[in-house]
Image 1 (cartoon, rainbow, N blue to C red):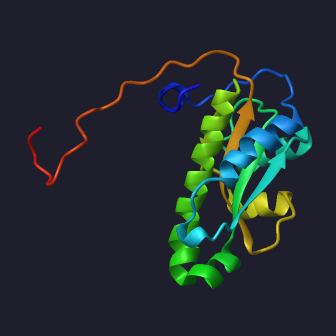
Image 2 (cartoon, helix red, strand yellow):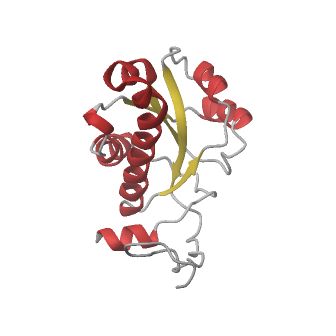
Length: 174
């Protein structure tokens, strides 16, 4: 699949088939994509927790209203915020971790789509509760969740506003 095709074809999927996703597919193809994302100062302070236990997913759904449907996999994209601060001071902890998480997540979403999987990026969840459910230490903070599975149906692309680009200076006119 071409990169452009993946970027334009990927959709947020909220309804999944019951089919399990093979662990080696998650580990080798998807998480490696996240691990190869760029990071500020090459800090690499992300941590990925793959949840496949239906009971744990049910608990996450109770504290994550953004987790819709019944995904067979939920990936918690976390950051070691203490390590991020050691490597990049307050900027590393408060800003770069968020950007690094988003970059890793985007890579995972595109790699999953390339493998015929559906994903949905989720920011609507109680981070402290997810920390407790997954037994994460205080310095490992979940910043995004990704629901993952085989899509029930193909989603249609929403319209895109193409009048958002300017060169050299911003103007009210396009």
